[in-house]
Image (cartoon, rainbow, N blue to C red; front, side, top):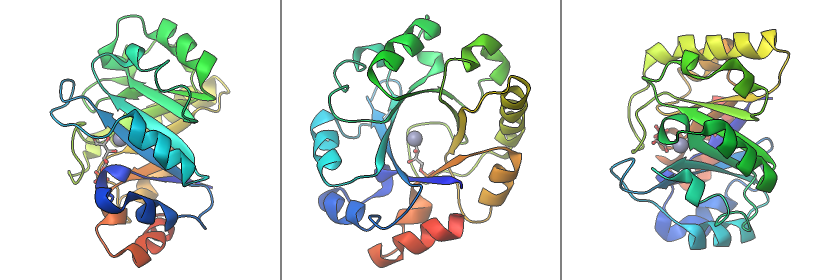
Length: 216
Ligand code: DX5
Ligand code: ZN
């Protein structure tokens, strides 16, 4: 079953608990949390206090996507919240394999993320043996509501090929501009987790679950 990860970036921040509780009945659902620092990306979102409170009102897994220049500084700080997956951007650090190891000590799942213009060949293949998730960005990070970049489909296919050839089972997650029209081609290419913000939340709360189901 494809995991759907609503991105809370597009939720109603003044009614976050209400928005989150609308997904209580869903299966195979993670909450995607975009942490932005106003430096690596030109936007700010939420911090540890909000994440801690969120964890109290949901049983769904929390998926942290760090769009920050110094992800290594957040690994320990965020480790007592109950976050399931911690993803950092490959482009932001120099010693990626060390950071993967550090994250793995404190979180059940570690992910690395690639911007649309970063080729998958940048990642030495042995790294794939140590990750739980590869996040393929299908928009340039920083904002919700952007258009899907078709060129990344090829990257999803390459990721799937690496996963199959090495007999691995890391998730292939795609994030940005996802809707009911492009979702089928992403899953066909190899995606196992679809992140969606505006597609799910740009409607009335009673429709959120229907949007999740239509993505499936
Ligand atoms: C973009 C974020 C995404 C964003 C996706 O920088 O990483 O998670 O919320 O939003 P949509 O689905 O609206 O493109
Ligand atoms: Zn994201």
